[in-house]
Image 1: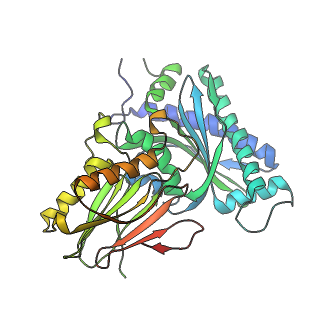
Image 2 (image 1 turned 180 degrees about the vertical axis):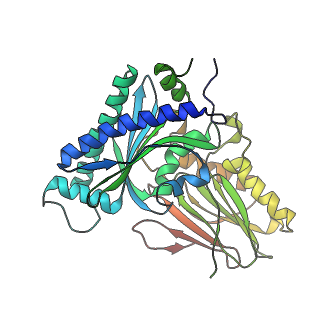
Image 3 (image 1 turned 90 degrees about the vertical axis):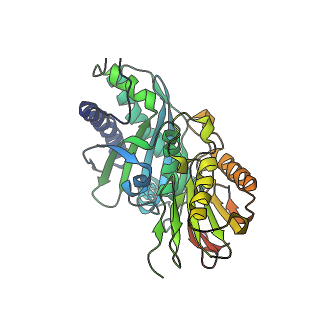
Length: 206
Length: 161
């Protein structure tokens, strides 16, 4: 039984992981659309095997200010899921949700941040629920945490986890937009051993 | 001022004479800037994890505080710098989220800072200034000619240490 190895990722595995992104992010995007009562479009998911110095550039540049909602994935697989929004998008989203009660500008007060965390909680939950249904595995999530900072600093958090096993990070990335001003990403970053677990549960790995 | 030389995550570089060197978006990683005060040459390392001996796959020596700092010093010495004249400035080591997925990485930012301090002490390189810890990311720019270490963070004034 070959273990999943970052130096030798089978192309078929890439396709299957993309499909996981498709189903998970699809579900998350539709729950976001429901909350906001707007149409949310999702781009084709990308499975990215990135060197550490490419990570920041993958999401708009290391210094792009983003709101990152970080949720731990627990249960039969472990890892993390992140919901990332450009700062302006994050505020637009909160504004839509709070219907006129939000403050001006792109900064967010405590209540607004808490609203954003709650959105993150719901839609990462939708992502993981569909993954759980698809694989028949128990997958739960932690409470969300939010930080607003440079993309490079936010993404270094999952990167460091991969730093313990190698020099590359593998993630399933999906970009989504609404018709107006929301632009963001879902990043599913399973721990390395969980990739094998996922691929086995889906029957593509022995 | 020309383009700055860019150092990636888990990477280190020497700064060409008279230029500047940068690393963007340090989270819990630590940027270590070292300078020979006489030749005014310097370099920058972006270390990610504290201890190479705790990890099996440790071939990338720039990734770890212990091996990364030593390698930067070695490369500077190979270019004629003297360790007895070296000084250091460090930044980063933040805690970006209140929890971390992998329990062995709890407080990795603090541990990175401690590990960098430890190896600099071993090498007898004094730390002139630092901007570490707390909960925000930092971009740093280092100018070995003047020794200026410029730190930029979201929503905070730029500071030079």
